[in-house]
Image 1: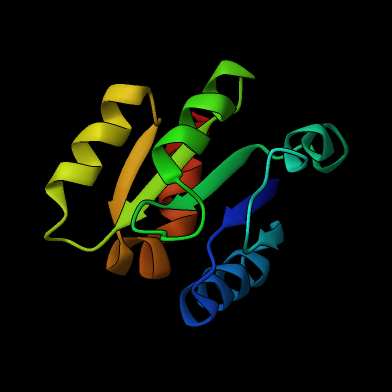
Image 2 (image 1 turned 90 degrees about the vertical axis):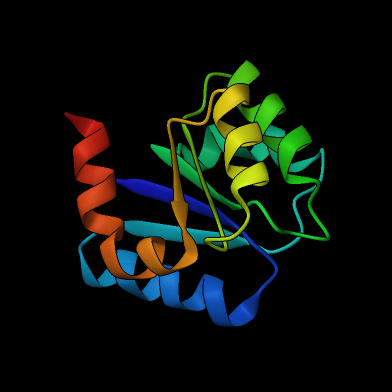
Length: 116
């Protein structure tokens, strides 16, 4: 299982990557996602793309839209009070939206649940 993490928050993205790798997934972080990275996704072949919905550097909603248009499954995450961002991501077609706490503690359960 390949996961791509789009998040410039070093503390958060490193926790997610470690949890993923500790559970047998391959994980790659792209801190600052740019248009050129879209072509790299064929090489990475992510099963799921996780994106921090509170990113200041990555325009998460536009990125989600582009990823979904290309057929990628996206999982958004944000602080528990940011229901506005969670709603927007769901409306765009994210397969799941989690709180930051959920993503760093329940990532394997979330991913396995979405695979079924």
